[in-house]
Image 1 (cartoon, one colour):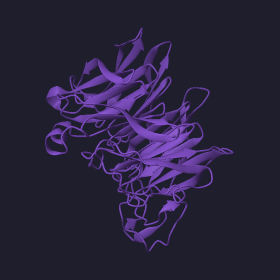
Image 2 (cartoon, rainbow, N blue to C red):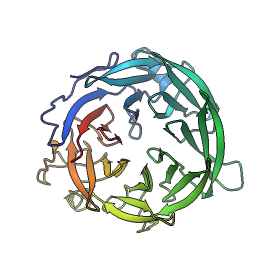
Image 3 (cartoon, helix red, strand yellow):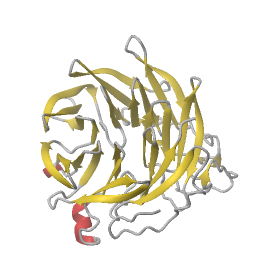
Length: 394
């Protein structure tokens, strides 16, 4: 079953059998808003089983596209195995939606314009979503939320050095309020941009792919502090490895994408008993060694989006160039040179990370822009749609 959002077209695949495999069942394609075409903007986030989709340029979408019907924020919930829009809201003065985050009951929308930048908190009240809090900021680079804690990342240029700034907020007695503000321990360039901010319980990780670092912040006794700055085990400043382009955290484990390394990889760090973070593994795509031409690998941008949940890791590769389609269906390397993209689901088995599924969707464009994962489902976005699978852990 396919559910259209507003006036958006639902053209495309809905072949559940073709896009399913043992332990992985294709559930549905959820179209993204029409004003969503941007190489770094998948326009969706997931929290506690709720999908939130949004257009990027809210002002131009409202004026030049299909009125305001698809221009704003859509809440997409699952009922009896079918995804459908349950709420929609817009804000006429929003102008630009830079980033999104949700925990299922709160949606945070980050504005992107320099002259009117803020993070706006909306909360679910019955079937309506009501703005309840605004946090003025510099242009918001990234937002994350977990249960009743949220964090907003931005670049602070007020001092002698350009530092990363994190504003932590807590929801207490039904109200959001600023709890703490922290600055990074060293200079940053791109702090939390794109897919490089994640939160889980008492840990936050923020990537800076230009300076090739990932900053770890941890909460102890209700206070947050920076506890580590992770760097690539294979540093190469000239290679533009983009270590930190994407990050993810689950418990005492974090993952950091290095989508510019050759071959592309994702590093998994684990926290030891002494509190230090050490590299536990480096994962790469099963077809990472394939080349269409001597200077053009089939797999590029592996790590453009990553998500962790326990012993599961999903990695998107938005410029993976194989014309393979379906699940675990590799084809000869001569059939390549597209921008369909791919996603790879890894599982940690007996201490080793193993690739379980190589996922390709027909007619997709840059699949793997952004991904999400929980104990029941995985979500993979391209520039037009969010594809949803139900997975079963062995």
